[in-house]
Image (cartoon, rainbow, N blue to C red; front, side, top):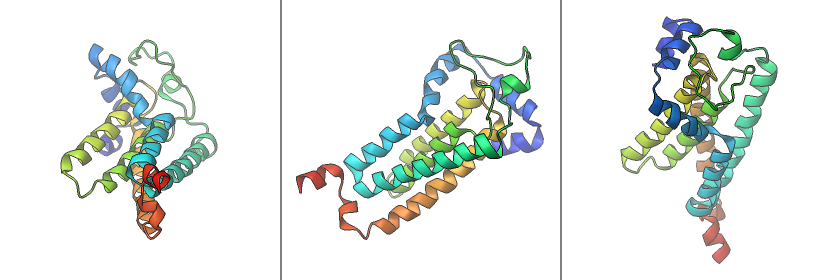
Length: 199
């Protein structure tokens, strides 16, 4: 859907299509749900994997989080440092929907770091749960999509920003899951932290 919007409409029109679908319930809920893609939220998820799932998945996911954080930083502040966010790009435009209480950023728009992070961790966890009932993967995909959508809804990013963040997040999620599968050769990596402490 995002790819279609990006290719069919310029960034401006596609932004207003998603940003314009607003109501009071979305204003309230997306103000909080956007934090799904926060670094702190994802660190907590990685630590929970380490403690309750197994040490290998937690450790590899944390390393991956550090790598994507570095990649995102280099892209936002060096490669695409002059990319304005919607508020600056459409300065003074009355059509933008803002949610009261949300701090609006104006620079370093590309790519969306929240989306990158959310799709990375939820792809990684979805691969861990690949043999489990499919509703778990559907839930993980839904959470990642909500995080991405919230970035446009809250006037923080363009559709192209979240599309790029999502694609990169999926790629890095699959890459670090592959690295994790290689780490299973280490016996200690297959036990969670609680089990290791008990040993």
